[in-house]
Image 1: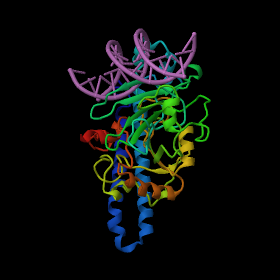
Image 2: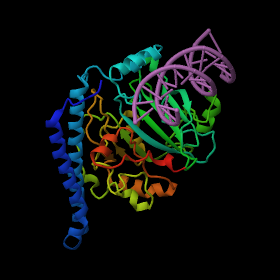
Image 3: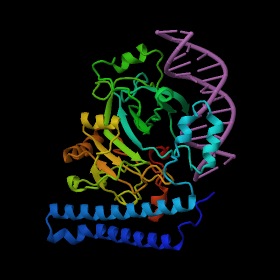
Image 4: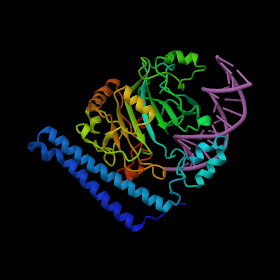
Length: 377
DNA sequence: AGCATTTGACCACG
DNA sequence: CGTGGTCAAATGCT
């Protein structure tokens, strides 16, 4: 039942080579500043760095791809068509039994359905529990759980139309313990239903929704949002993990001057990005968020947006499990804005999901970083 | 009556 | 064994 040694020596060799390349790219990245210090103007330096990052990213992708192939070769079922998530949604009432069966098929974790996953942060005007972050879509709460290290429980939501339309989108809402006005919303799976995003105009205000939309709970599911004066999407932080969109192009030039270390600018480190204060494990690339999910796409269109994509869902046959992709708004101004905006809110500019990135951490010889913000209690 | 939320329990993973 | 994610019965509200 394990992936075992399917890949074998050949794959190991390939991985070794790729890791080597990645390491070289990293070295290049590290030496760039010094080397270019005197000879190159700043723009050129930044450009070189961007290229180096791209190079590193490419290696990272290749490594993950290789790993995926290796896993698939050993795991067996990874023949594509039978998606790992099929069991989940079709279950409906089948619940437990189905889950067991699905596990027997080799799906690593329930959380890893091979669905795209990303995080957005919402900020509410005050810390009132009445307010709720929302994306304008209809969600139904199906659970709540106290999370270790978090002061507030995490709410679990799934699409209201899951049963009727088979929409498998889910989200997790958690109030940040660092800033009570900030909510971390982790989406998983894109909406396949046909619900429309209500515009602020036709939707009641967040506060109103709380009382009018039936019962309201601290982490209510429905409310207007974003452009709402009440609740706003926090500069659109989005961290994506899991299934990536169709081999997105990895362009870095648009935001060449903007790199992950952006976090460093503010003097606070979001998460241990590999501890180097550099790129997250494996390097990263920026690309236009061309594959943003519908919901996010809207977000992107409506607000300055900085997106971080981190893919790496191994064992996700249906989706490409390449290296991580860091995408940002196509406009560099958005990036700049994002950087300058976050400190205003006094909280981490972005957060990386590590759960699916163990491979990366392992790959690049870094200890898998703790899961970010909740750890520092 | 219908729908959404709450809450306890179950299950899988590390 | 601890933690996180999901299910499903119970409950509440419109």
